[in-house]
Image (cartoon, rainbow, N blue to C red; front, side):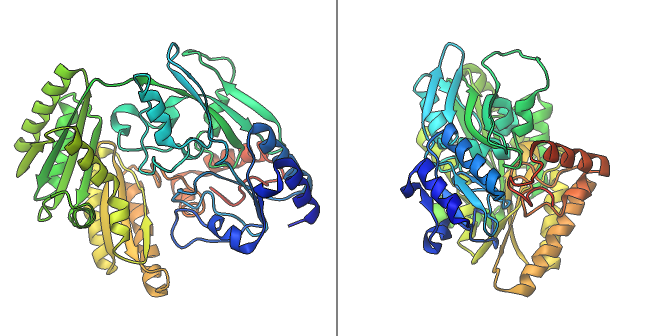
Amino acid sequence: MNSALLDELRLTVGPDNVLTAPEDLIPYSFDGTAALHQLPGAVVFPADTEQTAACVRLAHTHRIPVVPRGSGTGLSGGSLPLAGCLVIGLVRMDRILEIDPANLTLHAQCGVVTKTIDDTAAAHGLFYPPDPGSMKISTIGGNVAENSGGLRGLKYGVTRDYIMGLRVVLPDGTITFLGNKCVKDVAGYSMKDLFIGSEGTLGIITEVLLKLLPRPKSRRTLLALYDSMEQAAATVSAIIAAHIIPCTLEFLDQMTLRCVEDFAKIGLPTDCQALLLMETDGHPAAVADEAAYMMEIARANGAREVRMAADEAEATRLATARRSAFSALARMRPTTILEDVTVPRSELSKLVAFVAATAKRHQLLVGTFGHMGDGNLHPTFLTNERDHDEMHRVELALSEIVDETLRLGGTITGEHGVGLAKKAFLPRQFDDGSLTLLRAIKTALDPQKLFNPGKIFD
């Protein structure tokens, strides 16, 4: 790393906010993606948008690649450094700037933890619905950069659906604000949408203006156990056909269920083939009716047991158990590779069966869970990155799963992003015209190709 650049960075953000020693860089050499790691040249921690823009301008002048980073929980290598690059860590920018109950909005810096957003909204009787599994540690800026989903996506949508405005630092250091508090706004191109899900390749999101909702007044959580995944899938289809849109429709396969129970010890039965976690929220009368109807539908579609959480504490335990699926599976083997292929929900049971057959054919240990209500599947490979033969079999299996996902009309990623981990698969999903358009946008905004280079495409 250029010593002159380092000196200028220290003057910009303070010497304590620039890291260069190898031992200090190690925590920033990887993210939540398995088997990927690379030391950066330096890490810098700006305190606000202006300092971020100043750091970007310095990197632009010295032609140093820039990699933005939040909490580093990403699962596609999106915040993985390049050798010699400048990592811009955004966790110091952790202030909520405004909450506006009259307009149902919240304005926050990018480093605010996702759960803090919802907790702050709750204090005003409001609700921020997107709830990625990492919500207790991931940052709102990272959520926007990856367009994160979550357990409540079926009813409430994903991060994109709650973005009203963004403050963005462009690759040349220009600062721009895109959007406003208006519910309707069709002036010009919808530029903020270009940066949602852009994975740090087009600019650095430093502030976010979020839409909030009134907090639901009631909630009921249900648990249904099945002897086959097909019965669980049929239940989901029947619930949607009955014009019920639950807040949550989650599933665990038997391996995941056993790992979760061993980890959380909340009394889940481990001899069933599939578990559905269902949640409805809204007006108390409507919630009671929907919960009763969903119990009937589950039983009619072969559930061997259906029960309702007795109280809020039990509902929280069940939701926490589902959120712990990744952590529970990770205890099994040294390396955990969490995928997120997504298909139309009518095709989900086919993909679950294909994953199981593929794992067996390649002699791999795979636990599967996900968002059955929106077709988002998380096949989780339990492996050891030091076993090169096994890792090769993981690569072969994943390639086959991607091909089957696309054959069923799906996508290579529903919520984790492309990053480094999935960019080889992108040409299988996109045609040449689409890829050319993506590259043209990248070139227009980042002609020197210094922003998160190598992510999404080469």
